[in-house]
Image (cartoon, rainbow, N blue to C red; front, side, top):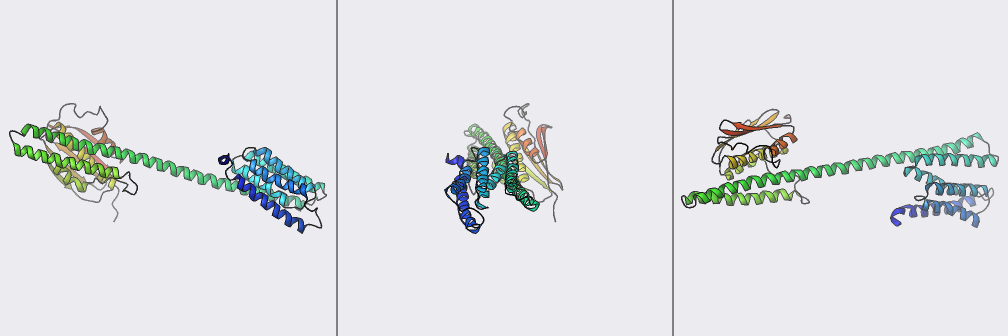
Length: 368
């Protein structure tokens, strides 16, 4: 019950205190013209706060009761002023709580009752009638303005919450993609090197030792990268993964493959482009190690004015159908999704005896 009432009990208490205090002051100030307050008058002044307390559950009935108590207070000849507070507060509450039609109808009823009382006591002055109309209209206009401001603020907050949820969802997708790329590359590398070590452990122990050393490095690297990615989810951690082209040499060194890198041009890159380019090269090396072990791989990075071109080609012979886009949706489709997310393109397919991946990632204009 307390949760449903919300602020109403406090507002009702404020209205009760205000009406009593103003009522005593107005009664003393108008003692020569109006009747002094008596128990009946105090009871009428308490109807308004009670109506405020029950307004959320009975909006029309409570507003009508407060207006009736106000009219009876005036008809009883008591001082002007204190009885007007409750109807005014209830009309504003009707507007703020979305019952605008009811509010304007009750405002019209309030205007009619006040004018009727004025005419009943012989006050037919046009200025007085206009003053009553202006006061009620001003009250309703202010209430409408407050409602509009509150709705716009609520809409901004709702939009901000939706944007925060959208960004959180995108970050979770990014984390999932980062984890897939890290695991796929390093696990594939470990698998290839383990197979090499088993094959050569008797015939060529030194080369097997090299393969085992590569496995050790790769396993350490995958743990480090997983820790880096998962730290993004922790409070106060950086909000973006750390993979970038500045780590390309490390990636090639631990891949255990014959890889040559050529860079054409140079310019600063946005972090999301760097990360996508790094992951595309990583996934391409993983595919080469998996489907064309022992092949030479050429990586070419072209820094253009409007795009970064990433080209990875191997000289081996990929198994037919091994890189098809059916299946889990990762691998080549995953690389294509990375490029598309940045507004770029990616094509992949056989090239001579090997396989080639080419991605074009848009770049913003350079500023001087």
